[in-house]
Length: 206
Image 1 (cartoon, rainbow, N blue to C red):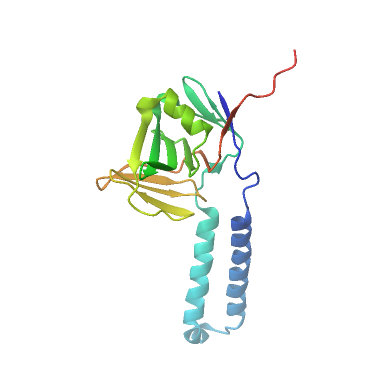
Image 2: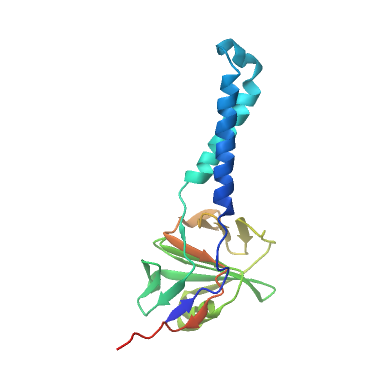
């Protein structure tokens, strides 16, 4: 069974471009600051500026080079044994679908596997989530939300039984139950708000 991504067609790369520009500005400021200093004694009057620039460059380097999952915006293939996104396969019997509701109305879902290979985050109820609920009901769990999750990218969803944290830019997530983290991963591949539509691939010519 194939489910085709029907969400945002061209995910923005603005975050990466902005980080690159800020990194260049920060490095330029650092070089410029050192050109104003003739010897070590001159640093006494520029400690604050130097520390600020170093912290800025360090935080930008961290955001640019930290580990991230691969964002996949094409399709999901699912069989009796595997769910496939890109070239990554996860065993269906290791997958869990958490449905988060507010006053018995759908709010969002999170699909994840025990090995931490794939993850889906979505505030949209789509063909894929409905198919998984009907086909694998024993692997679907319902949770009642007790907070107002933000729009992202760093999102916390508090439910009566557990707390879900996920980051849309990185793909990372953690699930906390009774003060204990039961799952925490940066998956190999992820997608969010895909609005997946069921469909068939093009038929091969004979």
